[in-house]
Length: 84
Image (cartoon, rainbow, N blue to C red; front, side):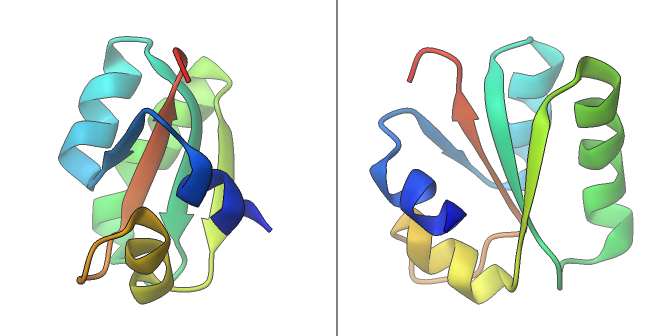
């Protein structure tokens, strides 16, 4: 499952702002998005990924994504940087 990729990533970005910024800079290999995140929050990330051909993995919940990222709160999005 993709949670393992998140857990094992050395260069992980957590959160929508950091994810969008890194995508805009062309520095992202893969993106993980929680299915239960608000649509207006994740749509811009999905659009950026589609424009740049970045792989998107949809995960079940923000809570699970946050846990996989090693944080105590939910995460709407996370990204693995290209240098990983």
